[in-house]
Image (tube, rainbow, N blue to C red; front, side, top):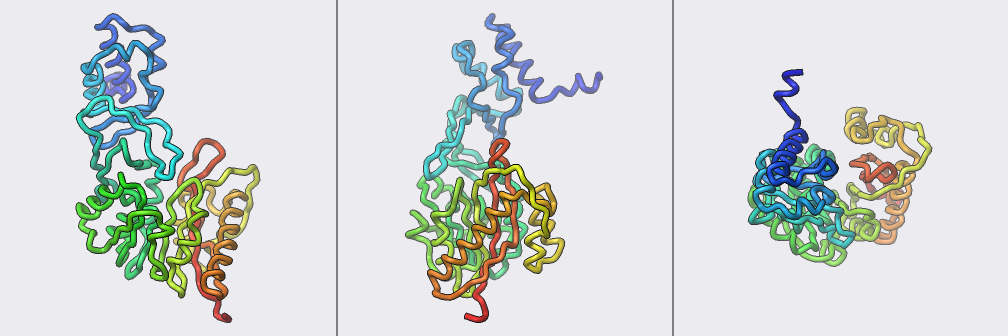
Length: 339
């Protein structure tokens, strides 16, 4: 008990700081406890509180010294509030800087440096498993097209750890463009990447990629044709992101990785994030195989020849609430030998 009391949790430290400060100012009321968040994000030396934190009128009357005390107790020097992501094409963040001179941060994840402005660019901590998965691939000798590169979410892991030979990175958010260019430099991989500014449907080069990343939500369907055009005629791998609404039923079946002739270790790697082992939700499996069927038709339209499109992986990256999952479907595309 004494040990627990001598090592308070970050939330307990925050609560103690707020109560003490408000008591000194003569404004404390027990109702204000509901305003103190239990969870927050930490980016570099910045704390990002949820949008509903410290919103009571009493906190609006406090001056800068309150936020300095809050930052200090959480071992930070800057404070901001973060809300829901904008539903625009760029999925821009809703962040308001409360304490600090600027909103740029520099973070290191898996030995990769990501610099960005939290007010202008999104960096989802919930996607860390997918960034790690991309880093674990063996892309030696491969040409990769990243259709939504952002600040380098997947481009950097593919270059730094997966050892892709070259990445063609498309990005249409001008706020992310400079960060992407700078992140390539600070990670010493800028010589193996070319950036294309604008809509990938207009800018992405054709017929050169062994692998294509479609990392956009809620759906990447409008860009499947572009991804198929980017693949070499001999085929390659597509990593297709999308949000899928959960259904009630589950489907027990052999893992699609095994049916594609992959070994068990790779199968486990693909499904580590699913947490259901070989038991896939019906809706996940249906999304994967419906996507594969559509990709087959698109490839035929482009090349006027038949392709075999195999589901080699289904990964759940995270849940959006209880019913919507962010999935990534990995498809291997090969021309049929009887063409």
